[in-house]
Length: 451
Length: 89
Image (cartoon, rainbow over all chains, first blue to last red; front, side, top):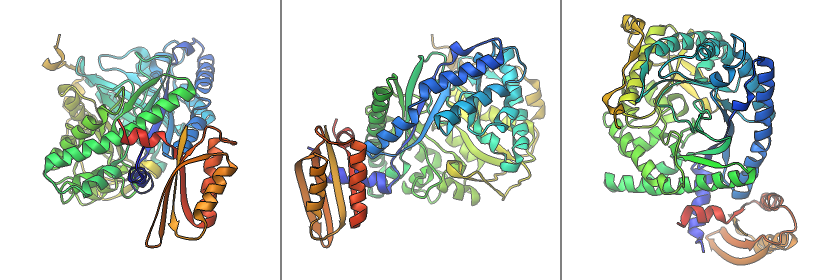
């Protein structure tokens, strides 16, 4: 029998510490939607998504109510669109993004991911068309997310793709200038992208996945911070406390994942063990690091604290779930984390420190606003730096950067909702143009030769 | 299947009676009650069987929440599994 104190502890986590399941994401294969006629392909895409995800939102809401655990987002990910659209005779892929938007609207989800291309070794013609269509496609849709994988430990870095992405991000920032260049918040550039990630903007349904799958992303920075408030031991005790808390959080995610899978009659894929912050007070990863003893996130020691946190979250979570995958680790999206926003405003948290932090946690330079006049070459070079960390360390890294049109250092960009507020951070304006212009491929590192 | 009902709020006459009456109305069988009053704060944890529920579980949840609102109490009704998942291996 569960004790009263255990029951009240769980309810307290949900009521006061923002414990929630961040996302239930349905992955849907679109391989059977290819068609030479883009209009036919788009119709097939909308029909397939709607038939599979028809009950996703209502089922999620039912689970929320019965189990008393909030499920913040219900989302959909699909096969990388460059693969599906390849069969269609068209140069402009915007229509495919619009089809994804229509399906998202009809299913009632708040994001749909998979307007994506995997170009880590090279481009197909379709990949190029998708990347060229990206600025328009993400401007003309609201809830479609895109990801481009430009590198992997096995293949090295496609620097031509890195170069293209700098220009794509600039164009997207310009086209969505009236909304704080928000288009860039829906585009992630990856190295070693996971194919089962439930979190946006990087979610897509990988080519090795089945027909349809349910992946769940947990959260709970507030719960970890509260647990640490009561821990006055050394760092071994801190790690132990985080592990126990992560275990509890992940068990919730596993329960919701199993229930959603059972009720929707769709196989369960993975639980993503992530600490995903929101701009809400008490839901910040930065505040966890500060609770460990740093005056402010970004101080010397931040990378070590984050390494401890990231490792303990995984160790605690892995036993709580039957299948773990996705990004699994602490997220550090600047605009979505109240503590990081403040640290960046104070100049304590810089782009360089964030880059170092990404070597020890999941994802990478995430939701970072830089001045609107930052050149495409500099954006590409920032991407190249971040991507190399992932490639050499055999981990996922990513860049979601917003060169906020018309804004300069000291300004803020308001995105609203979960995307939060981004203080514009300075970049070095020394030119990497000649390096980026060389293009080609950075060879795969020795770490790739494991056979 | 069983559900846990938690009731917290300012102590008053008849809280248990009202919650129990709502359970009876929905045909939820009360299996266990733990209840205490700290100073003026009423806290109760109730375990009920929902196998013979005369309505949908989600409707029962709404009714209990509403009962709480009317009486200035916080009433949460959730499946027992969530606590088992979190606290038992």
